[in-house]
Image (cartoon, rainbow, N blue to C red; front, side):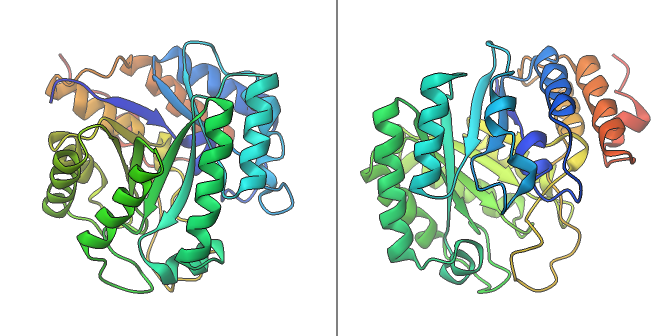
Length: 305
């Protein structure tokens, strides 16, 4: 493990299901704190209808405040949203890449996006065209890559088939999402190893939810197998939206950025992140949300050098 890019997801995946809508000024404070810590990529916002997810009604305003040195990622779910992303990119802050999900499990895709695979593949192809014309890199997020709370087992071949389909569309950034924390390090390592070997021109992104406490271990396994980018959220905030009907899956949450960055720092893995400044951002996350969050390093402090 020589180096890896960490993407901070607090502003998007982190707060998408938060019960109150944060002030735009507070989101911008968080942007500035994360950027000041040297985090290289930020998942900034979602371009989805405000009546569906009110948290992102200020997407364009927040986007305009992102410091120039940061790589910007956003998310959308259909061609209408992709056109809005393209318009924001053309008139405001540069957007480096736009993610959009497809679930390896068709039952989960129906629950999450109300489309079967056939219909959703048509929508994704249109999104890729819109983003390509705008000069924005598409990022395909393969959800339920390690198992599905509705379907159960998801075969690795089904995940890699989606990678091959996306690759044929010209997508060169692909995320494997552990939607409800069903992954384990061996399975993760095997999937990333095969994916990197089969598609060497693709940047693979690791996104784990920490429902069952394996998030950091899975992230390290992904990095060891060739993941170029890993996602995490300050305080472990976020995870699978509760609105997706999938039965009881336990406490949701993302990998905690502060704890992951501290582990990588101790291991000598280059991230470019200033851990002291990142812990200040973690404290700000707790202030803005008004409650203690899940970072252990924020409580215990980094291991002394």
